[in-house]
Image (cartoon, rainbow, N blue to C red; front, top):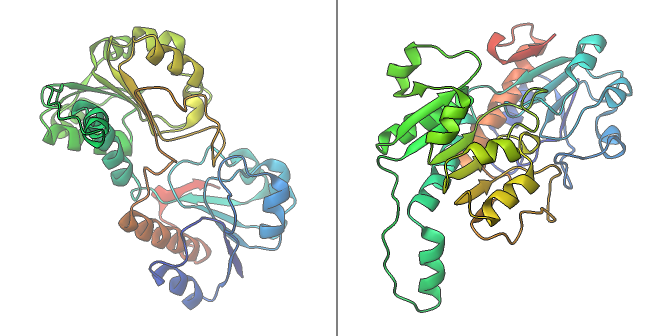
Length: 320
């Protein structure tokens, strides 16, 4: 059986994932050349996967039309945890399995979010720019200890952020659809209604998946409800946020800044947020650590082997 690798950074690092697939008898082809991020069209993807039995995917989109044109396809192994770019209903209808690498990426993304918090909490951008201009100007920063982080969504990433923020002595609020009392002691958090979280947080972090309910969740109304001078961080999915509303909230000074790692199409070099003072932009690099990619690649490969062996890890299976 053929496995097409579309996820970038699968080859050229640890060869353990490739060896795992080959030992299990799979023919593996590297189909990851070029930029296959969010927004890659079916015309680019179809020639790469048309005769594949399985795909190890990145963030490229799998529409119903694309899946219907791939009669051999039996499995999409998503390297990552989000699967909003895959038409799940079409997978179920066509009998195509969908699995993900749950439990691998969360720590790396949480680390990135904490880096963004510290970037603003210690005013590193200003201090670095002044030093490079030959200006020695020490100034008090807000710091992280005692500040409040508001986590909108409390899945794996939110929980990992909470553990790290707690170590910095931060107060942690969270909001999600199904709060659990035991989380308060386990993670040092407090559940509050969404509007209260916005009003009381120095840092608001989007940790929600992209769904019909979360699309556009962070727009003009949400930003207006956030604490004046607070920082908004989005390392979740681009469509949960209105970039023009965010730009306006930062430019008029209501928000003190923002950090954005996700974009509506990737690679993205034309974001309306480019050039806006106090907005930190990164190229969807939150998961990009060597250790994380080694772990995710191995987990994605293992999911393929386990699925075809009839013993997939239940926590990783989305469908069928």
